Image 1 (cartoon, helix red, strand yellow):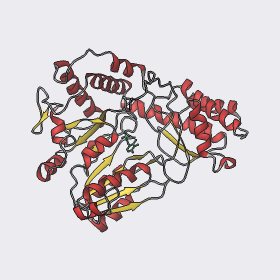
Image 2 (cartoon, rainbow, N blue to C red; image 1 turned 90 degrees about the vertical axis):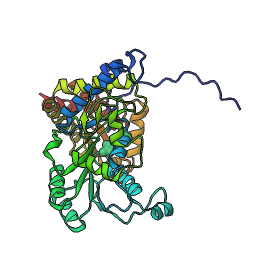
Image 3 (cartoon, rainbow, N blue to C red; image 1 turned 120 degrees about the vertical axis):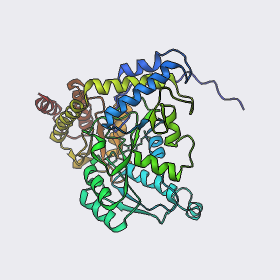
Amino acid sequence: MNAPFFPQLEIPHTIAAGPGPGNTAERVLNAFTSPGVADHMQPDVLRGMIECKKMLREIFGTQNVHTFGIAGTGWSGLDAMFSVIHPGDKVVMFVNGTFSGIDELSVRMKAATEEELKANPLNPQAASVVTIPVPHGQSVTAEIVDEALAEHKPKWAAMAHWETGSGRINDVKGFSDACEKHGAMGLIDAVSSLGIAELRIDDYPGIVGWASCPQKGMMALPLTYAPVSFSDRYIAELRKVGSRSFVHNPIMEARHWAIIDGQDVEKGTYHRTHSPYAVASFHEALRMVLEQGLLQRAERYRKAEKALRAALTSMGCSVTSNMTSLIVLDLPEKLKGKEKDFVNACRAESFGIWPTLSEPTQVRVGILNLISEAELTTIVQRFGEMLNRFEVEADVEAAVAELKRQLS
Ligand SMILES: *Cc1c(COP(=O)(O)O)cnc(C)c1O
Protein backbone atom coordinates (compact mmCIF):
# COMPACT_ATOMS: atom_id res chain seq x y z
CA MET A 1 0.00 0.00 0.00
CA ASN A 2 1.38 3.40 -0.96
CA ALA A 3 1.11 6.31 1.41
CA PRO A 4 -0.89 9.14 -0.17
CA PHE A 5 1.15 12.11 -1.33
CA PHE A 6 0.43 14.65 1.38
CA PRO A 7 0.73 18.37 0.78
CA GLN A 8 3.44 20.18 2.72
CA LEU A 9 2.45 20.54 6.37
CA GLU A 10 1.56 24.06 7.38
CA ILE A 11 0.98 24.94 11.02
CA PRO A 12 -0.62 28.33 11.74
CA HIS A 13 0.51 30.95 14.22
CA THR A 14 -1.53 30.86 17.41
CA ILE A 15 -1.45 32.85 20.63
CA ALA A 16 0.20 30.33 22.94
CA ALA A 17 -1.75 31.47 26.02
CA GLY A 18 -1.61 28.15 27.84
CA PRO A 19 0.53 26.56 30.54
CA GLY A 20 3.31 25.94 27.99
CA PRO A 21 4.81 25.91 25.44
CA GLY A 22 5.20 29.64 25.77
CA ASN A 23 5.11 32.07 22.90
CA THR A 24 8.46 31.59 21.13
CA ALA A 25 10.41 34.78 20.49
CA GLU A 26 11.42 35.56 16.91
CA ARG A 27 15.05 35.64 18.04
CA VAL A 28 14.89 32.06 19.25
CA LEU A 29 13.18 30.85 16.08
CA ASN A 30 15.74 32.66 13.93
CA ALA A 31 18.58 31.11 15.90
CA PHE A 32 17.05 27.70 15.17
CA THR A 33 16.93 28.24 11.41
CA SER A 34 20.13 30.20 10.86
CA PRO A 35 23.10 28.06 11.98
CA GLY A 36 25.26 26.41 9.38
CA VAL A 37 25.18 22.70 8.77
CA ALA A 38 27.63 21.25 11.30
CA ASP A 39 28.13 18.06 13.21
CA HIS A 40 27.88 17.59 16.95
CA MET A 41 31.66 17.72 17.50
CA GLN A 42 32.27 20.95 15.56
CA PRO A 43 34.12 23.43 17.85
CA ASP A 44 31.44 26.16 17.86
CA VAL A 45 28.72 23.64 18.69
CA LEU A 46 30.81 22.36 21.61
CA ARG A 47 31.61 25.92 22.71
CA GLY A 48 27.89 26.76 22.54
CA MET A 49 27.10 23.85 24.84
CA ILE A 50 29.74 25.01 27.32
CA GLU A 51 28.31 28.54 27.27
CA CYS A 52 24.80 27.14 27.78
CA LYS A 53 26.05 25.18 30.79
CA LYS A 54 27.51 28.36 32.30
CA MET A 55 24.33 30.34 31.65
CA LEU A 56 22.24 27.57 33.22
CA ARG A 57 24.33 27.73 36.41
CA GLU A 58 23.50 31.43 36.62
CA ILE A 59 19.79 30.82 35.93
CA PHE A 60 19.54 28.03 38.51
CA GLY A 61 21.60 30.04 41.00
CA THR A 62 24.03 27.21 41.63
CA GLN A 63 27.62 26.10 41.85
CA ASN A 64 26.61 22.54 40.95
CA VAL A 65 29.06 21.34 38.31
CA HIS A 66 26.44 18.90 37.02
CA THR A 67 24.20 21.58 35.52
CA PHE A 68 23.39 21.10 31.83
CA GLY A 69 20.58 20.19 29.43
CA ILE A 70 19.00 16.81 28.74
CA ALA A 71 18.01 16.59 25.08
CA GLY A 72 14.24 16.36 24.78
CA THR A 73 11.30 17.69 26.80
CA GLY A 74 10.59 18.20 30.48
CA TRP A 75 9.89 14.51 30.96
CA SER A 76 13.32 13.69 29.54
CA GLY A 77 14.95 15.81 32.26
CA LEU A 78 12.70 14.29 34.90
CA ASP A 79 13.44 10.78 33.63
CA ALA A 80 17.16 11.51 33.96
CA MET A 81 16.67 12.87 37.47
CA PHE A 82 14.56 9.90 38.60
CA SER A 83 17.00 7.42 36.99
CA VAL A 84 18.81 7.25 40.34
CA ILE A 85 15.76 5.59 41.95
CA HIS A 86 15.94 1.81 42.14
CA PRO A 87 13.44 -0.99 42.79
CA GLY A 88 12.50 -1.08 46.46
CA ASP A 89 13.77 2.44 47.23
CA LYS A 90 11.59 4.20 49.76
CA VAL A 91 10.18 7.37 48.22
CA VAL A 92 7.58 9.87 49.41
CA MET A 93 5.74 11.66 46.58
CA PHE A 94 3.62 14.79 47.07
CA VAL A 95 0.85 15.05 44.48
CA ASN A 96 -1.38 18.10 44.00
CA GLY A 97 -2.20 18.00 40.30
CA THR A 98 -1.67 16.45 36.87
CA PHE A 99 2.09 16.82 36.62
CA SER A 100 3.10 15.76 40.11
CA GLY A 101 0.71 12.87 39.42
CA ILE A 102 2.76 11.83 36.39
CA ASP A 103 5.98 12.29 38.38
CA GLU A 104 4.52 9.88 40.89
CA LEU A 105 3.71 7.31 38.18
CA SER A 106 7.19 7.70 36.77
CA VAL A 107 8.74 7.07 40.19
CA ARG A 108 6.51 4.04 40.80
CA MET A 109 7.79 2.56 37.52
CA LYS A 110 11.36 2.93 38.76
CA ALA A 111 10.81 1.90 42.38
CA ALA A 112 8.62 -1.12 41.58
CA THR A 113 10.14 -4.52 42.16
CA GLU A 114 10.26 -6.88 39.19
CA GLU A 115 7.10 -8.64 40.43
CA GLU A 116 5.26 -5.37 40.99
CA LEU A 117 6.14 -4.15 37.51
CA LYS A 118 5.13 -7.41 35.90
CA ALA A 119 1.80 -7.40 37.72
CA ASN A 120 0.86 -4.01 36.29
CA PRO A 121 3.43 -2.72 33.80
CA LEU A 122 1.78 0.63 33.03
CA ASN A 123 0.66 1.45 36.53
CA PRO A 124 2.73 -0.56 39.00
CA GLN A 125 1.72 -0.42 42.63
CA ALA A 126 5.15 -0.05 44.19
CA ALA A 127 4.89 -0.81 47.90
CA SER A 128 7.98 1.28 48.67
CA VAL A 129 6.41 4.48 47.28
CA VAL A 130 4.23 6.50 49.64
CA THR A 131 1.94 9.01 47.95
CA ILE A 132 0.70 12.03 49.85
CA PRO A 133 -2.27 13.45 47.94
CA VAL A 134 -3.04 17.16 48.35
CA PRO A 135 -6.38 18.35 46.93
CA HIS A 136 -6.44 20.12 43.54
CA GLY A 137 -6.26 23.86 44.09
CA GLN A 138 -4.19 23.60 47.26
CA SER A 139 -0.44 23.87 47.79
CA VAL A 140 1.94 21.40 49.39
CA THR A 141 2.94 23.10 52.64
CA ALA A 142 5.96 22.78 54.95
CA GLU A 143 3.77 21.06 57.55
CA ILE A 144 2.51 18.43 55.12
CA VAL A 145 6.07 17.59 54.04
CA ASP A 146 7.50 17.59 57.55
CA GLU A 147 4.80 15.29 58.87
CA ALA A 148 5.12 12.79 56.01
CA LEU A 149 8.91 12.63 56.11
CA ALA A 150 8.92 12.28 59.90
CA GLU A 151 6.54 9.35 59.64
CA HIS A 152 8.03 7.52 56.65
CA LYS A 153 11.76 8.41 56.80
CA PRO A 154 12.28 7.81 53.05
CA LYS A 155 15.52 7.77 51.10
CA TRP A 156 13.98 10.12 48.49
CA ALA A 157 11.20 12.71 48.48
CA ALA A 158 9.83 14.44 45.38
CA MET A 159 7.48 17.31 44.64
CA ALA A 160 6.64 19.74 41.83
CA HIS A 161 7.79 23.26 42.66
CA TRP A 162 5.01 24.86 40.61
CA GLU A 163 2.19 22.38 39.83
CA THR A 164 1.00 23.46 36.40
CA GLY A 165 -2.11 21.29 36.52
CA SER A 166 -3.73 23.32 39.28
CA GLY A 167 -1.52 26.41 39.06
CA ARG A 168 -0.24 26.11 42.62
CA ILE A 169 3.14 27.04 44.10
CA ASN A 170 4.42 24.46 46.57
CA ASP A 171 6.67 25.31 49.51
CA VAL A 172 10.14 24.48 48.27
CA LYS A 173 11.88 25.87 51.37
CA GLY A 174 9.69 23.83 53.70
CA PHE A 175 10.38 20.80 51.50
CA SER A 176 14.14 21.33 51.60
CA ASP A 177 14.17 21.92 55.38
CA ALA A 178 12.16 18.75 56.02
CA CYS A 179 14.47 16.72 53.77
CA GLU A 180 17.48 17.94 55.75
CA LYS A 181 15.79 17.33 59.08
CA HIS A 182 14.66 13.79 58.27
CA GLY A 183 17.64 12.66 56.21
CA ALA A 184 15.85 12.36 52.84
CA MET A 185 17.28 13.43 49.48
CA GLY A 186 14.90 15.84 47.75
CA LEU A 187 14.11 15.84 44.04
CA ILE A 188 12.19 18.73 42.47
CA ASP A 189 10.18 19.04 39.27
CA ALA A 190 10.98 22.67 38.44
CA VAL A 191 9.52 22.46 34.93
CA SER A 192 7.18 25.42 35.34
CA SER A 193 9.12 27.58 37.74
CA LEU A 194 12.66 27.87 36.38
CA GLY A 195 13.23 31.24 34.72
CA ILE A 196 10.08 32.79 36.23
CA ALA A 197 10.27 32.15 39.96
CA GLU A 198 12.75 34.00 42.11
CA LEU A 199 14.88 30.91 42.68
CA ARG A 200 18.44 30.16 43.76
CA ILE A 201 18.65 26.43 44.14
CA ASP A 202 21.79 26.56 46.29
CA ASP A 203 19.58 28.07 49.00
CA TYR A 204 17.93 24.63 49.34
CA PRO A 205 20.55 22.12 50.52
CA GLY A 206 17.97 19.41 51.23
CA ILE A 207 17.31 19.14 47.50
CA VAL A 208 19.84 17.17 45.46
CA GLY A 209 18.21 17.13 42.00
CA TRP A 210 16.29 19.65 39.89
CA ALA A 211 14.73 19.17 36.46
CA SER A 212 13.04 21.73 34.20
CA CYS A 213 11.98 22.02 30.55
CA PRO A 214 12.88 24.06 27.47
CA GLN A 215 9.59 25.72 26.56
CA LYS A 216 8.12 27.29 29.68
CA GLY A 217 10.17 29.77 31.73
CA MET A 218 13.21 29.30 29.48
CA MET A 219 11.35 30.44 26.35
CA ALA A 220 13.27 27.93 24.22
CA LEU A 221 11.74 25.61 21.64
CA PRO A 222 10.23 22.36 22.88
CA LEU A 223 12.40 19.33 22.18
CA THR A 224 15.63 21.19 22.59
CA TYR A 225 17.02 20.92 26.12
CA ALA A 226 15.55 20.29 29.55
CA PRO A 227 17.76 22.09 32.09
CA VAL A 228 18.84 19.93 35.02
CA SER A 229 21.10 20.41 38.01
CA PHE A 230 22.44 17.77 40.38
CA SER A 231 24.39 18.29 43.60
CA ASP A 232 27.60 16.43 44.33
CA ARG A 233 25.65 14.28 46.78
CA TYR A 234 23.25 13.17 44.03
CA ILE A 235 26.13 12.36 41.69
CA ALA A 236 27.97 10.43 44.43
CA GLU A 237 24.83 8.37 45.03
CA LEU A 238 24.38 7.77 41.29
CA ARG A 239 28.01 6.60 41.05
CA LYS A 240 27.32 4.18 43.87
CA VAL A 241 23.99 2.71 42.73
CA GLY A 242 24.12 3.30 38.96
CA SER A 243 21.29 3.88 36.53
CA ARG A 244 19.94 1.46 33.97
CA SER A 245 19.67 4.19 31.35
CA PHE A 246 22.41 4.98 28.88
CA VAL A 247 20.86 8.04 27.22
CA HIS A 248 19.40 9.52 30.41
CA ASN A 249 22.24 8.63 32.74
CA PRO A 250 23.14 12.09 34.11
CA ILE A 251 26.86 11.27 34.41
CA MET A 252 27.04 10.11 30.80
CA GLU A 253 24.84 12.85 29.37
CA ALA A 254 27.01 15.45 31.15
CA ARG A 255 30.08 14.39 29.18
CA HIS A 256 28.94 16.06 25.99
CA TRP A 257 28.61 19.30 27.99
CA ALA A 258 32.26 18.98 28.98
CA ILE A 259 31.66 17.72 32.52
CA ILE A 260 33.80 14.66 33.17
CA ASP A 261 34.71 13.04 36.51
CA GLY A 262 32.98 15.86 38.35
CA GLN A 263 35.02 18.58 36.61
CA ASP A 264 34.60 21.09 33.85
CA VAL A 265 36.91 20.08 31.02
CA GLU A 266 37.84 21.97 27.87
CA LYS A 267 35.86 19.98 25.39
CA GLY A 268 32.86 17.67 25.48
CA THR A 269 33.04 14.05 24.36
CA TYR A 270 30.49 12.16 22.31
CA HIS A 271 27.35 10.98 24.07
CA ARG A 272 24.82 11.26 21.26
CA THR A 273 24.28 13.43 18.18
CA HIS A 274 23.40 16.92 19.33
CA SER A 275 21.94 19.34 16.81
CA PRO A 276 23.55 22.70 16.02
CA TYR A 277 20.02 24.09 15.52
CA ALA A 278 18.92 23.00 18.98
CA VAL A 279 22.12 24.27 20.59
CA ALA A 280 21.94 27.65 18.82
CA SER A 281 18.30 28.32 19.65
CA PHE A 282 18.62 27.13 23.26
CA HIS A 283 21.69 29.36 23.62
CA GLU A 284 19.71 32.36 22.32
CA ALA A 285 16.82 31.68 24.71
CA LEU A 286 19.18 31.53 27.69
CA ARG A 287 20.82 34.77 26.56
CA MET A 288 17.39 36.39 26.47
CA VAL A 289 16.52 35.23 29.98
CA LEU A 290 19.77 36.61 31.38
CA GLU A 291 19.52 39.82 29.36
CA GLN A 292 16.10 40.48 30.89
CA GLY A 293 17.48 39.69 34.35
CA LEU A 294 16.16 36.99 36.65
CA LEU A 295 14.77 39.28 39.34
CA GLN A 296 13.32 41.66 36.76
CA ARG A 297 11.59 38.80 34.99
CA ALA A 298 10.11 37.50 38.23
CA GLU A 299 8.81 40.98 39.00
CA ARG A 300 7.34 41.53 35.51
CA TYR A 301 5.49 38.21 35.71
CA ARG A 302 4.15 39.04 39.17
CA LYS A 303 2.81 42.31 37.89
CA ALA A 304 1.36 40.87 34.68
CA GLU A 305 -0.40 38.03 36.49
CA LYS A 306 -1.89 40.38 39.06
CA ALA A 307 -3.26 42.65 36.34
CA LEU A 308 -4.66 39.79 34.23
CA ARG A 309 -6.19 38.23 37.33
CA ALA A 310 -7.96 41.50 38.15
CA ALA A 311 -9.25 41.86 34.59
CA LEU A 312 -10.58 38.28 34.37
CA THR A 313 -12.09 38.50 37.85
CA SER A 314 -13.90 41.70 36.83
CA MET A 315 -15.66 39.62 34.14
CA GLY A 316 -17.00 37.12 36.67
CA CYS A 317 -14.27 34.46 36.72
CA SER A 318 -12.81 33.19 40.00
CA VAL A 319 -9.13 32.39 40.16
CA THR A 320 -7.86 29.47 42.28
CA SER A 321 -4.17 29.48 41.30
CA ASN A 322 -1.18 31.39 42.69
CA MET A 323 1.50 30.82 40.03
CA THR A 324 2.70 33.99 38.29
CA SER A 325 2.85 32.57 34.75
CA LEU A 326 -0.54 30.86 34.69
CA ILE A 327 -4.07 31.59 35.82
CA VAL A 328 -6.36 28.68 36.65
CA LEU A 329 -9.96 29.79 36.99
CA ASP A 330 -13.59 28.85 37.22
CA LEU A 331 -15.74 30.46 34.52
CA PRO A 332 -18.82 32.42 35.62
CA GLU A 333 -21.40 30.12 37.26
CA LYS A 334 -23.60 30.14 34.15
CA LEU A 335 -20.93 28.25 32.17
CA LYS A 336 -20.52 25.41 34.67
CA GLY A 337 -20.06 22.20 32.67
CA LYS A 338 -19.24 24.13 29.49
CA GLU A 339 -15.55 24.71 30.24
CA LYS A 340 -14.31 22.43 27.48
CA ASP A 341 -16.69 23.93 24.90
CA PHE A 342 -15.44 27.38 25.86
CA VAL A 343 -11.79 26.38 25.57
CA ASN A 344 -12.39 24.59 22.27
CA ALA A 345 -14.16 27.62 20.83
CA CYS A 346 -11.14 29.78 21.74
CA ARG A 347 -8.67 27.25 20.37
CA ALA A 348 -10.58 26.95 17.09
CA GLU A 349 -9.77 30.63 16.56
CA SER A 350 -6.05 30.22 17.34
CA PHE A 351 -6.41 31.59 20.88
CA GLY A 352 -4.60 28.71 22.60
CA ILE A 353 -5.90 28.52 26.16
CA TRP A 354 -6.32 25.17 27.95
CA PRO A 355 -8.63 23.23 30.23
CA THR A 356 -7.23 21.41 33.26
CA LEU A 357 -6.20 17.87 32.33
CA SER A 358 -7.41 16.25 35.54
CA GLU A 359 -10.58 16.84 37.55
CA PRO A 360 -12.12 19.28 38.36
CA THR A 361 -12.41 20.89 34.93
CA GLN A 362 -11.20 24.46 35.05
CA VAL A 363 -9.78 26.87 32.48
CA ARG A 364 -6.06 27.73 32.26
CA VAL A 365 -4.76 30.95 30.76
CA GLY A 366 -0.98 31.30 30.54
CA ILE A 367 1.22 34.30 29.85
CA LEU A 368 4.62 32.77 29.07
CA ASN A 369 6.46 35.35 27.01
CA LEU A 370 3.15 37.26 26.64
CA ILE A 371 3.54 39.93 29.29
CA SER A 372 3.60 43.19 27.34
CA GLU A 373 0.58 45.45 27.76
CA ALA A 374 -0.45 44.82 24.14
CA GLU A 375 -0.26 41.03 24.55
CA LEU A 376 -2.16 41.03 27.83
CA THR A 377 -4.80 43.33 26.32
CA THR A 378 -5.31 40.90 23.45
CA ILE A 379 -5.77 38.04 25.91
CA VAL A 380 -8.37 39.98 27.91
CA GLN A 381 -10.24 41.03 24.76
CA ARG A 382 -10.29 37.58 23.19
CA PHE A 383 -11.36 35.98 26.45
CA GLY A 384 -14.05 38.60 27.12
CA GLU A 385 -15.45 38.46 23.60
CA MET A 386 -15.80 34.70 23.88
CA LEU A 387 -17.61 35.09 27.20
CA ASN A 388 -20.04 37.43 25.41
CA ARG A 389 -20.55 34.88 22.66
CA PHE A 390 -21.37 32.32 25.35
CA GLU A 391 -24.02 34.78 26.54
CA VAL A 392 -22.21 36.02 29.61
CA GLU A 393 -22.59 39.77 29.97
CA ALA A 394 -18.97 40.64 30.60
CA ASP A 395 -17.87 44.24 30.20
CA VAL A 396 -14.78 43.74 28.06
CA GLU A 397 -13.89 47.43 27.86
CA ALA A 398 -14.01 47.79 31.64
CA ALA A 399 -11.85 44.68 32.00
CA VAL A 400 -9.24 46.13 29.65
CA ALA A 401 -9.34 49.40 31.59
CA GLU A 402 -8.79 47.46 34.83
CA LEU A 403 -5.82 45.65 33.24
CA LYS A 404 -4.25 48.94 32.17
CA ARG A 405 -4.85 50.53 35.56
CA GLN A 406 -3.07 47.65 37.28
CA LEU A 407 -0.15 47.74 34.84
CA SER A 408 0.47 51.47 35.06
C1 LIG B 1 4.91 20.83 31.48
C2 LIG B 1 5.26 20.08 32.70
C3 LIG B 1 5.87 18.82 32.64
C4 LIG B 1 6.11 18.09 31.33
O1 LIG B 1 7.00 18.75 30.47
P1 LIG B 1 7.12 18.30 28.93
O2 LIG B 1 8.03 19.34 28.34
O3 LIG B 1 5.75 18.31 28.37
O4 LIG B 1 7.73 16.95 28.87
C5 LIG B 1 6.22 18.20 33.84
N1 LIG B 1 6.03 18.82 35.02
C6 LIG B 1 5.45 20.03 35.12
C7 LIG B 1 5.27 20.67 36.47
C8 LIG B 1 5.06 20.70 33.96
O5 LIG B 1 4.49 21.91 34.06
